[in-house]
Length: 170
Image 1 (tube, rainbow, N blue to C red):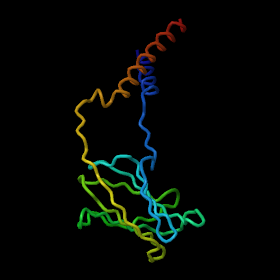
Image 2: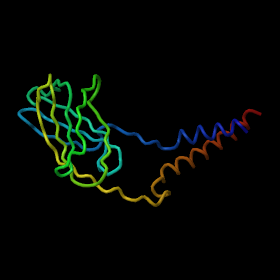
Image 3: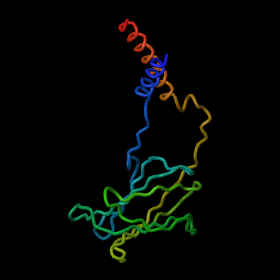
Image 4: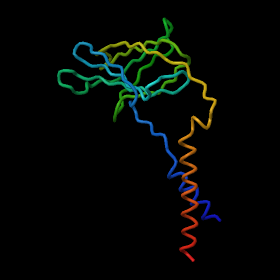
């Protein structure tokens, strides 16, 4: 009985769809400033309130098409004239400089960036950003259809495999 349960759990996990989050697979805000490209990437196409959002920041020299060295990014997020977030973000030693932020409510925001190098503002840019209202999800079966289907198929295949394995073992 224990082996049947282990097989069922194993196969249901193997065949159920998993959510993969690819960083900056969503959209990107870009602005050219004095020969440099300021890029802010998001991990989501639609940005909604009360949902964590991964943002990454990069600065590219348009002439050489290569990343520009900087020490940190000073980020300010404003809703109208009210500053709701302001902080320096140290440049990542490996990969892109990234942060996770949750917008508290829907509306129009402004992201202002300053790429800093040795306490000097290398490049600055501002971007408008619209945060959508989160839609109510009242239908569990509809919203998790693939997960439920994958689990069902995994349990079914696991059960068939377990029965077949028991018959061939005898």
